[in-house]
Image: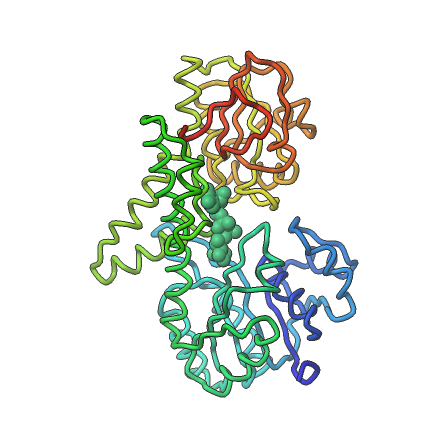
Amino acid sequence: MNSNFKICVIGMGYVGMSLSLALAEKDYNVTCFDVNKEKIVKLKKGSMYIYEEGFEKSLKKNHNKLTFVEELPKSDFYFICVNTPSLKNGKCDTSRIKDCINNIINISKTATIIIKSTCEIGTCRKMQKMVNKLNANNTVIFSPEFLAQGSAYENSINPDRIVLGGENQKALSILQKIFSAFTQNIYAMDWESAETVKYASNALLATKVSAINEIANLCEKTGANILEVSKAVGEDKRIGKSFLKAGCGFGGSCFEKDLKALMSIAEIHNIDMKVFNATLQANNHQRLTVVEKLKRRLKSLCGKTIAVLGLAFKKGTNDARESVALYVVNELINNRANLKLYDPQACESFKYEFKTKFDKTINENCFYPKIQDAIKNIDACIVLTDWDEIVNLKLKDKNVIIIDGRNCLKYIENSIKVGM
Ligand code: UGA
């Protein structure tokens, strides 16, 4: 069955790249398209442009099953993996999905279109109506992506579940067959349910993080140890062990964006999502707890030299979108501190995101390629990402105040943890 279908993946971001690699790994031939020609040129040469565990190796291994193209080809299945950024009103911008569908229809009026990009509840039905109005016979299916950056490849090869949303039973059953190469745990449902699964999953995960952070803040006052608390709480299977790591808050391009989109849909239906609103509020507060802790110890941050270790929104990725570091660094700048910034992968993304968010450029001299140089001659150090080299850091100077925003440092006993 593998060789009979022509499969095209549109959008070579984390989602499209991992899907293409995972399909190739299962012996499918995949044509990969992106409007960004630079990306395609690099991929054609066999070089990866994003840092993600497993990508490089799989690209090398499966290069003969992957064709990278600069023009959208004719295909039987098109997987749309383009980004759907937040609009000012919190809704997600689905215009790129719409553009893709129009481009597909110009090439094939029968191909199945699978939307993997996160989109608002109701989007797929609208897209199917648009297709029908254009007198095309394409079927629209929604298949939300659940991969997490840092483990994107592993999540794509071994997904917990596959969700398919749509009305065309024939298309659904072919896709079930394709995805059965990855898991038997496949759920087919209507579009709106599948769209809701994606938002509900991220909203609940984000809420779990905000909830444990709130417990951690209480632990700090009562003398309890959040690490012990989380461990024992997570042993309850109904709660589960994951997403109970307390710290300086969640970041990334998905949680905040998806929560905002969910709340904006709820608002249209006159539903006030109090829990999810609180999740975001709690995270806004949590992101700056590390700076508050520092201020309490140093009184004024003005003129103090502070190292910020970890700019990526989590370890294992070079992505700094909505990373806690953006907010922390901005606050340090507002308090006129001197900065020494370190991240093994995410400096470029951080510079771009910081400029976009705050319209300020950080002096190049503030970035240190080596962690050892970043921690020399400093008054304090804030840890925001638990990269291995940060976790294993050995900082001998006892006078340096260390705020461990991820409660992760292994060898530094005098660090100030979040929630302890
Ligand atoms: C998230 C979801 O986990 C994926 O399932 C989903 O597919 C993805 O969004 C998406 O919608 O595309 P991701 O944003 O890559 O994935 O990263 P997570 O692992 O969920 O981490 C998000 C943030 O929460 C990070 O800043 C992380 O450090 C923080 N976090 C996570 C904690 O502070 N504590 C935890 O226990 C877990």
